Amino acid sequence: MSRRCELTGKAVMTGNNVSHAKNRSRRRFLPNLCQVSLQSETLGRQVRFRISANALRTVEHRGGLDAFLMKAKKADLSSNAQRIKVLIEKAQTV
Image (cartoon, rainbow, N blue to C red; front, top):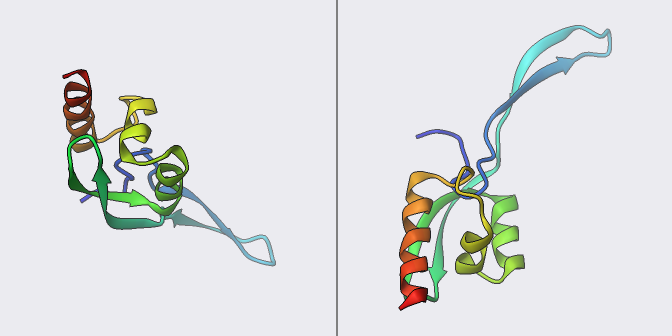
């Protein structure tokens, strides 16, 4: 399983550890990923995602999973999130 947020696309970054003597060694910056179940009001069920803590705050700020997915770019979403977005769009049009 990749270390990538399913909703925002936030992934591992690389950089340097810099000591007091300015010695540099490579390191990895890992995203703060959480396994969460988010409620979709349109579908009437819960959906499990592996998302970053920052994305969880953004979902709550935008008013829930449905509102977040409607504004999200398709390129940032995982295949699972894209499938859920299509289901929500179909349910909202009916």
